[in-house]
Length: 90
Image 1 (cartoon, helix red, strand yellow):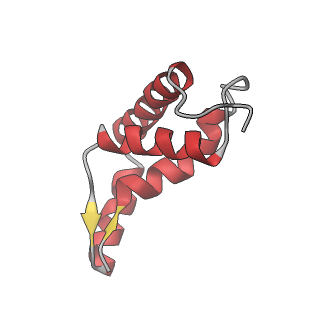
Image 2 (image 1 turned 30 degrees about the vertical axis):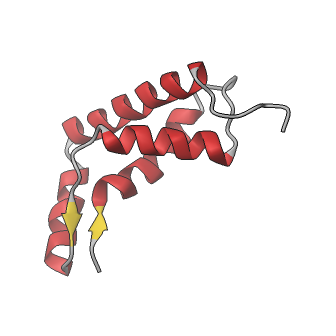
């Protein structure tokens, strides 16, 4: 099965970053918009094998990669919070 490690990293890091943004909407639509924007700005890291998974796990320990993921999530939160795609009264 092919997986995108960038997607896994966004899922792991997103809750931590969201703690710094108390006033934004955290409905599933807004969270999905945040995920999509962040992932569209991150280099995809696809893997298939156990060996590839190990390589990417080592990559996740790379401080620069984590910083890139955090930066893209924060940028996505800013974009979504300024341009919500739904009515908050729904």
